Length: 343
Image (cartoon, rainbow, N blue to C red):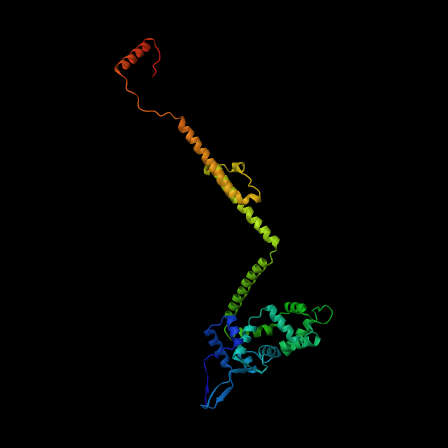
């Protein structure tokens, strides 16, 4: 019977769903990954009902190496063991997706920690002589191991013949080719799945998202950690700013808009200190009474001026005799060279 390949992506379990959510994988992304996964799934399982064959839905270690174009190495086995949670020796599609999500997202620091833990067999926090030799044999071919050993003799291990993680990082700086195979495996996992650019873009998105969450959390923590004194100081500052606003408004009213704008140097002459905090609640009423008093005074002045004004009506018409008398007096003034004036 011929083999039959199914293009339907398996239903994600809880573990795979978490990785889908974390990476924000679309249905298209899952189809691409499943196509890559199925391509290297060489084992077929016979279905008794219709005597057909389908893919087993798992890949073993050799198929895993083939999928990322790598040789069988102990470092690869360490990576495989990291993602093979059930120690079955094979990966199903859920484990495969989880493996990519775990390993492809490791930054340089995390990759160094991973490699350090792989070669620290006794997990005592240091890589000693035999473990270091094993590291070289695993990462490099035989013809390169001797050259690397010779180069490592020039490296100072603090005189104790051991390498802790801090020295391991310095070792990577001085001999970057030492751990290149580990970074190459990570790079190939990116290239032969969704593409290196896709992974780099996804890493940048996750870093940005994590940074935003951290900033938000720090802001919330700062608010929660504010003591009563800090809250009191903040309240006093707000009251001070509010007082300055009220004072500025009062100065503007007293000076007038034109004088306030043209003579800023005189504003300080119109500053009036407010009453103590005990009478703050009455400040609005006090200002209202003062304003009412000023209005009453202005009104009284206007009324007084109106009372002193003598109304002027039309002149009373003169009689014939009065006109003749006024004309006679005018002639006498003219004869005496007196200045003419109105009666």
